[in-house]
Image (cartoon, rainbow, N blue to C red):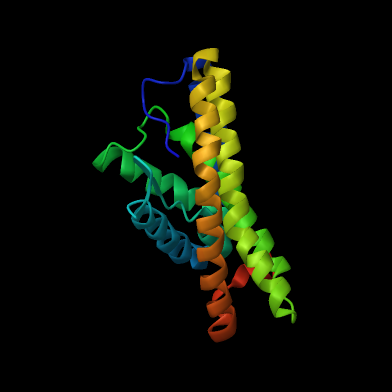
Length: 202
């Protein structure tokens, strides 16, 4: 899901960096002390989750867990993912510093939908709740895949084949993330519902 350095044109990198900087400043202004710990924990979840790989033919997919991050941290999921991407770029070379803004927008913004679907899942119908919890994991990855493909297409026609491959391979990841999210959130909603504050608000 990361775009590496040296791939994108400055015409994409610069606007994305400006938007990310503005959004980061806004969220830092809005964040409250009691949100910081949860946001930091979700950053760690995203950071570690990216190292869990699933084999897919000659290649592999890694977890994103954007929906879970969004379910627990709401709009501050963007900050959680931004910080995790920064450390991944510094320590492991995943993505990079020049592409940090683009990668944060591609992965961080869709993660916020996780909170939206968790809120919809706050109802007595167990089947509907599980469906919304599944969507909380499925939708953010699906949107991230579409955004990633769109960015690659904007970068040039030579990336058309890669953009199509991204959508194809990530379709399996969307289902995996949806199932993980449904199982985890269903368990937490039954045992520790107070851990899902985003059921009430974003």
